[in-house]
Image (tube, rainbow, N blue to C red; front, side):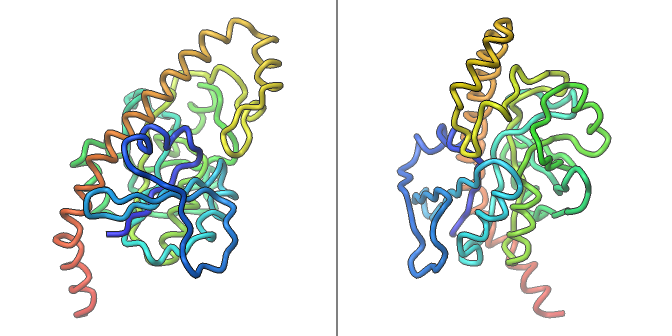
Length: 260
């Protein structure tokens, strides 16, 4: 199988990339000039492509246009996310039935079979991921969104919509980096660029104004690394589960549609 996995930034991908022989990659005979980082590795019998979309919906949509989506059998939108539900804790891996933007102008669904396989591989099923245009930084903001969804992130709806448009079965999967009652330790919009790289001037200013945030920042960094590791563990179970079961569970569905 050819499986596409997306992450926003390299820090989300790094724990998984360290376990497999991922190398930078270019699709042959593809007319779009590469802006977004792309990697490929053979994992068991499967060819896995990883696309780093950068942070935010606009970047995610552009990144998905930068590759030939239709050559893939399955697309997994992954990365880290904030919890909107007290039952979802840092380190939990969740799979959503659907995703929608906070303003509800765009919605997209995960493939039900892929959601089922994600649950069997250890992900907690949830109804909706909310895709926000900005980083949701405070417990108060999370509470205000909690009636709309159970997880908040910044790319999923756009990735699922792009895959659906090309008729590629897709699924939304994320690992929780921060709890629903947890404020982020700094304003990450000021200290990260779209690649997830630190702006040192912004970090020094943020920490300098509020030195008490340093332990909170260290704790959040630890949580994020642990969440990325949990996601890597999940993907190492999930990719083989898809490979082993997809033809058995998906083909009858395709044949049924063809016969009607």
